[in-house]
Length: 286
Image: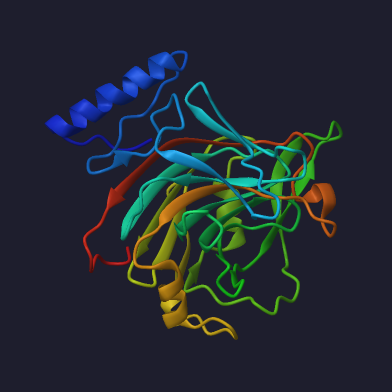
């Protein structure tokens, strides 16, 4: 959990608001926000968020609910995903969020995205065979992928997920190098299978420099202004997404190629304790 800081009047009011939300959610404990962070989720409702379809050709708003202080995302109808998008927009920021996805569930955290949630930078939470957690993807931005290894699951005889294991990545034409990546062994040591995992994501710059920590360990960095890839024009990308953007959570569609390996029947993704700290322009990357 977060370190204690001296409580200012504004933080005290925010803490009271969060505790009230926790009581309404069945007594669920909500950690006190770090100084300077503001809650994006009140613990009881989707106020401040908007459901959006993944594509206008399949205009499902998905199934997003709140239970016991947790946002739960599911496919609805089956095999069709959606986004949950903040109504507010953000420039430079640090985001904190906890995730607990089922296996398999192809989800992620969208940053600097458009209002529909389908174009922007994504922090992968691909909790599925051959997936990636903590790398990055350019949704509608030349489809770049920035990751150093893939993941798979080791299961018990009863089919229960025991742990994640690393595997090599196949050839990807749109793969770009990360500016920093923790070894797979480091990630596997800190990741909690079938439990809650804390993400902290920092985004600074017109075309953002992205840094992701998971459970307190720095996992990856990517300078999106320096990506070299056919079809990725930094100037055009900035014109497309703008200097500020929304934050979104994802439920992925299934597809013919991966079938149920992308999103298992009845699978859920869960999110809680979502807060953001706005940063002044020119803030350092770390």
